[in-house]
Length: 142
Ligand SMILES: [Zn+2]
Ligand SMILES: [Zn+2]
Image (cartoon, rainbow, N blue to C red):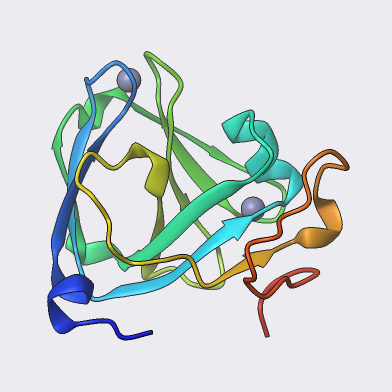
């Protein structure tokens, strides 16, 4: 698989469900993965969450910054969401303070990059078993 420079540097915009929060991010992008951990499942209300990493300085909230709520779990993972509609928007892991993970399902521009792997497969729901050929890691990717 080839990835052009245009793909990895391209700017993308996204928004929450109600539209109050809008953001723009610009590459280079970090890892793009599907996370099956319990916290991602709960905050998304879904079988797993898909996040792409970007440098914190390359993510800009265009509007609705005051609508952002945040929640930090016991493990130090901080999640931002729209306080009005509840959309999950970002996730920051305490071990990577300069990287912010953006919920790719909130993007409004088409993302040509593809997910690299599944993580926290040990916590996956019993009713969904991914068969997309991507590597599956029990916890974090090595
Ligand atoms: Zn909203
Ligand atoms: Zn997770």
